[in-house]
Image (tube, rainbow, N blue to C red; front, side, top):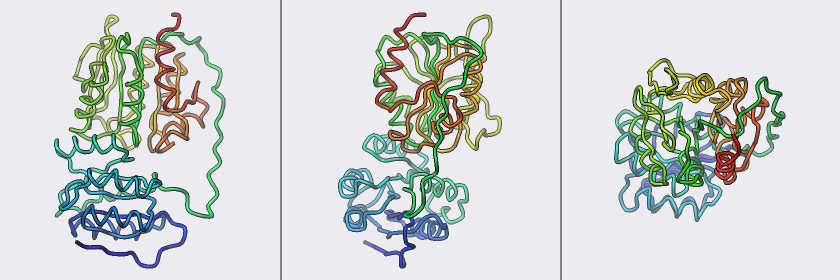
Length: 358
């Protein structure tokens, strides 16, 4: 067992508790956070049992939680941490393996806010991509430091459209990122089993994880799978962009099919939402209903604009129910959202529209 307290805290900065049994992980992660002027380390712990106690004692804003640890693993510790420190956002430090992906999906369903796929322990110190991704996620999940005024949010009304929208969608396209897996479960789980349009989804996730997410979504009543190259869209099915591939749609003689490619990342992401939304607008026009769920950054904003220009409709998740109001906030602030809804209302609204007049 090992516990390290941080030096005297930097007043007002979001605090991070690191729980990982590997010293070669705790050390670099702790130094990265302390070197970032936006964050501070509350403490580091080497097992889940001690981590739960420190979470209760220190009440950190964020917890970085390893999955595989002695005495008490991360999955066991997670609900206890959330009970002891309800305000904390927990980021699971997961390995890029099938087992790691399965456990991460379970953790997200138990209340973890996000995950960060980590490299092998011996490679953490020099893993620049992991450092950047982890710090970006910690900052995005952080509460605003004490004394800092909130950024003014100006939600513009939806701008006039050049084409009259279809009242019943022929295609639903969803984009999501941080907090997305659970949000997708809530939205898809609220849809009727006899939904008669195809649903295409881009969730920012790496390889293996997207296949596991598709498997979890398929248990909610509609068949779901990672998309395959050239696959015709069928009503009542869910197609998920595979990790590390952009998914777009093509139309040939009236048949809409999927296309996968590894062209450069868009908005630092692959898969990205903008390419999917742009292609949906091209093949389905005013039949598209685009939904932008919780997530960091602004991916989906430009694609939402293309959807609206083609006469389609756009729904954005509201700030209160988003883990991070980056993507949906960018859509709302640009005046591209026909509706801004709480997560609990999005599934019922999709159902209402699917039953509406043509």
